[in-house]
Amino acid sequence: MNLIVKPSQAQGTVTAPPSKSMAHRQLIAAALCREARRVDNLEWSEDVLATLDCLRALGASIEREARSVVIGGLDPFAVEEGALLPCRESGSSLRFLLPLALLSGRTVVFTGSERLLERPLEPYEAICARQRLFYDRQKDRLTVRGPLKPDQELELQGDVSSQFATGLFFALPLLPEPSRVTLLPPVESGSYVNMSLAVLRNFGIRIMDVGGGRYHIPAKQKYRPHPVTVEGDWSNAAFLEALNRLGGQIRIRGLDRLSPQGDKRFTELADALRKKKPVLELSDCPDLAPILMALAAAWRGAVLEGTGRLRYKESDRGVVMAQELAKLGIQAVADENRIWVEDGTLRTPTEPLDSHNDHRIAMALTVLLSLVGGELRNAEAVAKSWPAFYDVLQSLGILIERAEDEAHEDGSGI
Image (cartoon, rainbow, N blue to C red):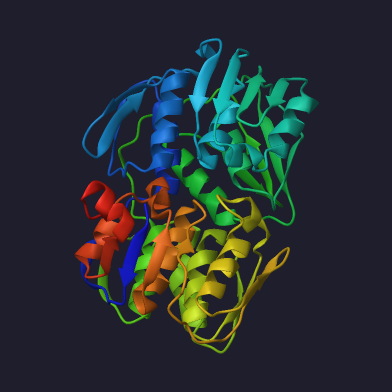
């Protein structure tokens, strides 16, 4: 889907979409309860749907309603032989569920896009090698077979992804003996680990943080039903707040100021961008990089540090944002762990921008196009996390229409 965005400002009141990060975690924890439990306030993004499909394949009972599901009854020790889990492009689905899939001792197959299967999985591969478990990774699938065993010496690199720790935290409490997990420094995305621990506590799971990146996980625990309403998403609300910083007047409802979400730092980081070319450290909130690069391009530049993991997202985010900013007249350079956005003047692009099939790139570029106008290709990438993104922007007064060639093809607007 190619869209034309015209210069316009956003005004009005909107409720933040539900947090995709929280939804993944809460759905998995609810599925592991013996009694089914309703999870309310869900957005049917592609990633959330992937997690639901995978949980159903593992044996969870799922009844989907308008904006909620009733879910439970998953026994990960009783997974069917050859269970097929369709992760599509969801890294959270794959990384959170792989340790659970290893509990049964039966063969489980994860499928996904080629890009997903290219993303780092080495920590799990190392655990499987250590415990002599079957692990076979192909371009379009990953096949594993347990059973995963308790381990007092599990070590994970803390700067790859917090999702590996979260996956182990879901599975290890169910084993017959205790385990220990150590996150080796430097530890990044610590707020996401804390988010996982908060969700697990609510479901009756005890994981003891003993300091120094070490976690003790008692054995034979049970998930206990807990009322769940998914809270608002600070990550996606950042794009609305960015429109405010660029002249909009949007009142954003439904955000918890006490949330464990690390991306609530956006307002603090956006304030820092008012300084001339500030240095911002993003190792704990790398998903904010595209929209912060967009704001830096609209203002006076910035240096973003702690950005190394952007290479392994849905796209190589630092590199592709730099490519698209060049079309807008702004120079940016991304290296191994740092991004420079130069001071400059935004101009209307003479060629279409491209999302590179990355939802956060699509949303960040849309924010900039609301200033200068232009075309965005592959805008449908937003469905990964916020399918209603363009509908919400239109309701707030941002002028968006289907590119002329596509509109003529099907006779529709967006």
